[in-house]
Length: 154
Image (cartoon, rainbow, N blue to C red; front, side, top):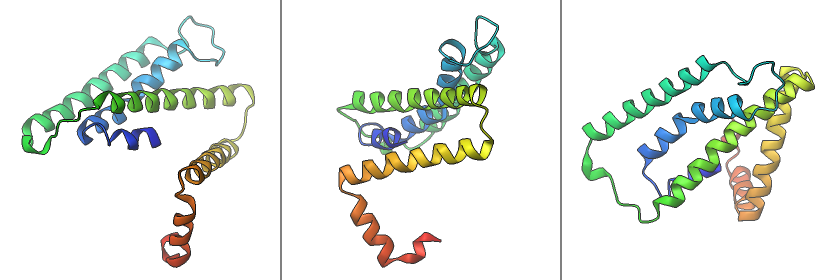
């Protein structure tokens, strides 16, 4: 998610929305060809799921492109370092796909309950986010804001 948000520094918001909503294709591609989940077939997922992912991605792209074409063209700016934004989006989408596959692998091998899997994923997300916030120097200002405005916890 962090990579997707930082991509906005280098690309337009509509481009980021198209990529963010097209993640399903990456999830299915990783699940089809690179999954560690044991299956009996050559492809890890049935072919129809790949077709569904392609149609969903195509629909998202067409929906957003028609909004961009029909919208206000003065709103779009040139981004000189767009490649950085696309790289961040690619990193985000691949990470999401690998995360989904790792959850599927954990479910098939270790058989955790849904609550245990959810709690574990959130714990590690919290841990990584806290470490990132400390490394970037935004942890303590954020903590100070929470202490000064406790109503934000609700």
